[in-house]
Image (cartoon, rainbow, N blue to C red):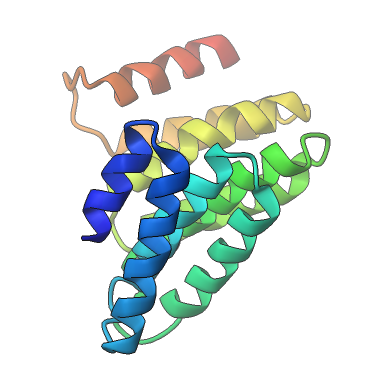
Length: 170
């Protein structure tokens, strides 16, 4: 049921989707189904971010991070750091340092857990922020390290985007 509510949000019916997501989340909690709590909270945070309630969205990410710290629930940890970075940047656009810190955490966690796609996404988001604050060499290093782990000839959009970012930073 949570996925149906998330689908409502993705189709633009955000307010009703949020209400349904919150209802299903509470039912899951009462049943003790906490294993997917980090993912559910992250999706709920994204929905609140879409309607501009960034404080609520960030609070939900913090709650998700608490769940992700429990044994067996850390699968979404890197993505949660990435989401917090995105929301923080929207909430405080002038303060790049918080988002950079979270994206570096996401990158580290993804790398440690061999989650190459999440590592790639974190690098794609981190590199431009580093470049904006005058750290072009570090931005190139982040992208180069991620690309080094990718198979040659892969023409996926995220990989092409990463290579374009590298060319811009050269």
